[in-house]
Length: 75
Image 1 (tube, rainbow, N blue to C red):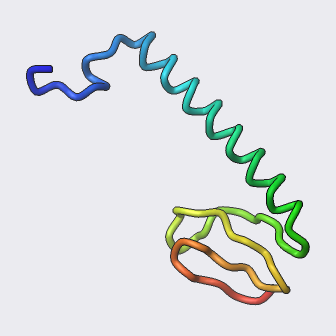
Image 2 (image 1 turned 45 degrees about the vertical axis):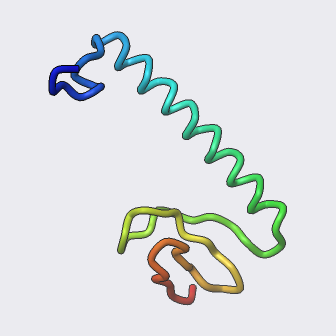
């Protein structure tokens, strides 16, 4: 690719299509994750962790918990 990144070598339309597919995969994963937490008694999802911003917070037994960085506190 002569020093170009993959993104630089793609047309705007190709990039837009890749972004759309990535967004669709993310939506699918979010839906699946929400369904999985519904199946686990006492566990639900919350917002993104404000400390690391790399994970959604889990709510269990009255606690908010980030599975990525371990940050958490009681509700």
